[in-house]
Each structure stands twice: as C-alpha cells, then as structure tokens.
Image (cartoon, rainbow, N blue to C red; front, side, top):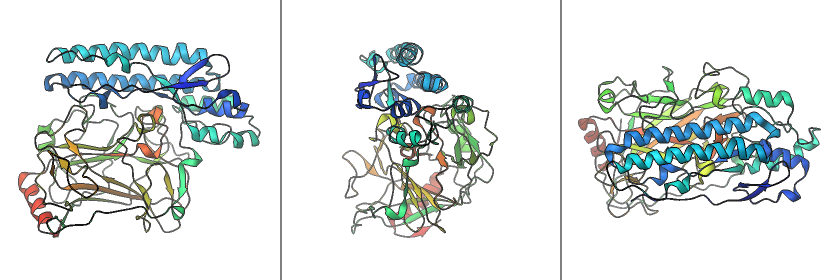
Length: 475
C-alpha cells in the first residue's frame, strides 16, 4: 500500500497583482514595501515529499524508483536556483511560468515513471499525481527582518550586486537587511543560557539494559567528504546536494555496495566498518572552500569553511525497559529529516546545544554558546527494529523510536541505540555558522540529520550487545 499525502496551500501576493499559491497565510495587502521585498528574498520552493509517501515499493523496483526520486530533488534544486537568480524581480508571472509551472510538469512526468516502475512488479499506485504540484513557502524569519532592512536604508530592496552574488553562490547572497538570502537568518540563533532545561530521560527499570558500547572513529582527519547519500540515493552522484562528513568506513559513497563496505578499511580503532555520516557545518567567514565551485558545495549555496569537529563520540546504549537484540548487518537508519523546513517536523530530530548546557537541547535553533563552551550536535537514532528488514522503501518504517517509557511499539524489538555526538569550536556568540542543506531548505537548523549503516562483524556486534545487556561500559 502506498500512502499519499498532499500539502495544503493558502495565498500570498508576490510583487502585486494576482495571488500565488503558498503555504504562508499572511495577507500581502497589509505588508509594507520592505516586508514585500523580504518576502521575495526569503521565498523558497516547497513540494510534497514523495520519498516519505512511498511506504511500500517492491524490492526489484527500488533501484529505478530511487533514481527517479533523486531526479525530483534535482528538479526542486533547479527551480530554487531560478527563483533566487531572479531575486526581487520574481513577480507572480515569473513564479507561475518559470518556477512552479515547469517544476510541476517535470514532477508529473517523473511520478508517472515511478508508477510505471512499481507496476512492473505490483499494482500500479493511484494518487501519485496529486504530489506533483509545488508552492512557494515564505521564510517567516526573513519577513520578520523586513523592518531592519528598511531602517538600514535598503527600502526592503536587495541591491543588484548582492542579487548577482546570490546567483553566483547558489542563494548565498545578502539581502539589504544583512541576512543571507539563502539562510540562515539572525532569528535562527538563540543564546543557550536563555533556554530552560528540557531533557527528560525515562526511568531505567530492573530489566533494562544500562551498558554502553563505544567506537573511537576519529574526527574525519582524512577529509572524507562527498555530497552523495548511499542510503537514500544509491548509485546517484551528488544525491544529497550538500556535503557530508564521514567517519568509520573508508569507501562510503553513492556507489558502495554492501560487499564494498564489508571489505573496506575503517577509521574505527576496534575494526568496526560501519559508516557514520552527517552534513558538514560551515563557518561563513568569507573563506573559499575547495568545493566552492562544485556540486554539493558553493554551486548549491553551501558556502564557507568546513569546520572539522573538535570531537566525535560514537556510542551505543541500552533500553530502559528491556535487553537489546543484535542489529542485522547492513541495517540502515536515518534520523532526522533533511527537508524538514518544507516537510514539517514529523520526522525532524535535530538536537543542538553547547558543552556544559546539554540539559538544554534545541530542535529548530542554532545555539549561541558562551566563552569556553563548544557547539554540540547530537543525533539520537531510532532504537526499535521490526525484526525483519535492514531497510524499507522510505528508509523509515523498518525502525521506530521507543515510546516515552522506553518500550518499543508492538511488533518491534529493542536494539542498541546509536548516539552520534559532534562538537565544534566556534567563537562565543557567533552567528556565522550554517549546516549544509538542500538548496531550498535555507540551512535551517531543524534540517540537521544523521545517517548510519551497520557493518559490524557478527562477533563485534555480539560483544556490543553483551556489554550493553550486562550494564558495562566498553569500547
């Protein structure tokens, strides 16, 4: 069965005249000229996420379907580039004829090909065509910044030279208000000291598993970067449209089969060949990184110096109410949603904080850390497995998060819970950091995500499970 979801829409006037469809319900009639300019500068493209809607795809159809899904990501990225290249001149006619119209037509053709591929092995899915239409989404942070832009003499209008810079850098130019057109905005940051403690942990019961198993895999000192995603877009170069940091398996890229991963070297000191990856974090200090003119880098708005982590901790922990079972080899897990700015937060799982303040976790803000404190990203993975599948069509339904009390949903069993914790040295109060993202996601902190493929040997996995179930700290 294929679940189909459709994004609702209301209207926003862009540049005067007729109304365009968007998911923002603000009334353009009440907007000042500065707000209208900020609206245009902060617009992005929002489309229904087909990948998460495809809950069941026949195994033999998955390679072709994955390839088509990757094409849809490229179609959205191209549409966003057309939007940002036009800058403040993107009136309603341009959006209709040059952005949304062509994008919808491309998506309709791609969805038809997806349905045809599925039909070769199963019943042709119905309703996919309802996922073709896209809208314009307003970054409300950019809209809120409009008065600042007007006060600084810009009148809410982006300068021509700045618009050109945005085009050259794939959306990384500046609006008159001084904010990055491609994000993030000033309001995407918050002082961690002003955040209330919000971390709650379930009580560990007598039958729970209290141990921890750790792998020391380095900080990507060997500079293993690429913009592939072997889980979501296998066999597709630049399938992520943003750069990833890798630790563990040395041969992870879009074309790495299970056999390649099993025979590869590793940066982990215990011989664990598992692969761990996440989007790089950049410092937007004017530095021209090596990928400034490359796909996944500067051509898609991912600009600035790639920060090497100050520390990376890879650990597996137990379940509060039960023992854990071994993970299957080549189990794939994604935590978080790289498209959560446009998709919504149903699958979002970002956690930002600062060392010394990790009882305060942020889901949709970057932290401003005080002197002596480092920025922390924590990816806490799903810890319940369906007991059958190493992956699923949408890469989500074969695993699940535990309930609030730590128990797994019916039909799932507890497995070691992976936690990736990465820290960075950033100047106190710095607002010039940005996580790499799909171009249209505007580098929002809520889009942060982590990926994992288990390539532990059965012997090492058994050792990890025994350690966790016996309440020890190992690794």
